[in-house]
Length: 125
Image (cartoon, rainbow, N blue to C red; front, side, top):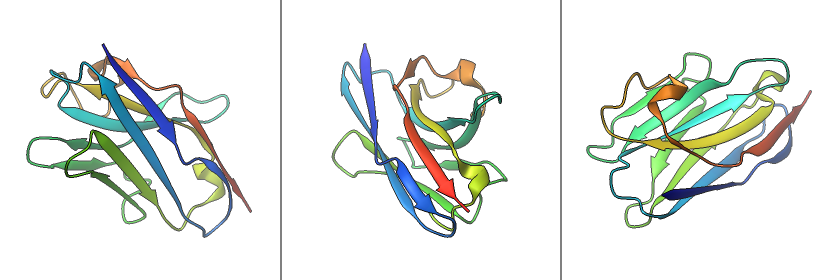
């Protein structure tokens, strides 16, 4: 089983930046994609971005395109989410998820079978 640990969350002013990290350990074989989701209070968990380890293909939610970049460390099993021009509506708990290459739609929580514990991002207006 793979373990995912997120870090990098915190409190930031609107317009600021944060970089989240997701470190994978344990049995990573069979996991070929990593995604970030977020969940605000009272709302459903929604996809933010995903990166495919093979080929580096990336996917972004429309709400974050142009402000967010997902990337993977070249040698380590760590995925980053660089978030710029943050808005109060970006406030949420951010979760890292991992899954197989062709497990389903990139934006569906059902595509991923490993999840981290989440890290809080709060954007003050």
